[in-house]
Image: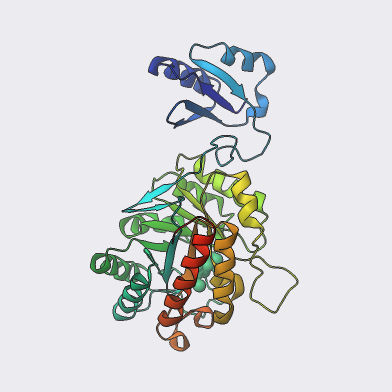
Length: 341
Ligand code: PEP
Ligand code: MN
C-alpha cells in the first residue's frame, strides 16, 4: 500500500483520520490535492504493511482505493501523479508547453560581467540566469567561487533584470545563505547522492534543480529526487547533464534517452544541460536542438561574453551572439514538436 486515493467527496475529517492512522503506524502522509481528488502518499517502509492492514485502510470513510507502486520511487513516479508537475517561479513556469531556458556563466565572477551576460541572454529569450557562487571543482587549487559575495552579485543582477537566479548549494551548512538569495537551488552532479544535502533542500520549499550524477542511473536520479520529495518539497526539476561512458571525444555523453524515459517514469519536469553534456561550445547547439526535439521541458546553457577569460568552463561556453542564434533555431524545433520557447 503506497497511495491512498480519496473519493471526490471525501471530507477534511476523513483525511485527518487517515493521516492519524498512518502516523500511528509510524508513517508520514504526503498530500497531493488534484482538481478532482486528493491522493495521500504513504511515506515510510510500506513493505511492512500487511494485507489486513491495507484492507483496513481501504474500508475507511472517504477512501476510494489503495494503490501499490511497484517502483522504488513513489512520490516522483507517474503512478503517484499522472499529470505533469509544473513549478511556478516568479512569473515563469517550468514544466508546461513553454520550454524555459536558463543561461549564464559557469561561475559568478564579478557584477559587470554577470550583468552584461544576463542582459544579453534575456534579450535572446532566456528567462533565468545561472551562475555558481560555490563551485565543485575537481582540483582544490582551481577557482572555488566567490561564496556569499557571488550570491549578492546574483541578487543584484536579478534586481536589475528581473530574472530569477539559479545557483548551486554544495554544503548543508550554506543553506541559509543560499535561501536568502537563490530562486532555484542547484544540486550538482557530484552531490546527487549527498543524502544529507538532499534532505536539507527537501525540508524547504525552494525549487531544486537536481543534476544527474556522473555515473548515476536514471533510477538513482529518481531515488535522489525521492529523498527531496519525502521531506515535503515537491518542486524538483530533474537535470540530464551527460554521464561518463567509455567515449572520450566529448567531456561526457549526453544521454538523450533519459528524456523520454524520465517523461514516462515521472511527472517531474526534465531539464537538459548540453553544455556539461558535451564540454565543447561547438557541440552545444546541435545537442540543445536534439534535447528540445526529444521532449525536454527546459534547458540550461553556459554563456560567457569572454569564454577565453572565464574562471571555469570557458571551453563549453557560448558567446552571447551564438546563444542568440541558437535560441532562434530552438524556436523552430520547439514549434515542430508542439511547444514554444
Ligand atoms: C555547473 O552547472 O556548472 C556544474 C558544476 O554542473 P555539474 O554539477 O553538472 O558538473
Ligand atoms: Mn560549469
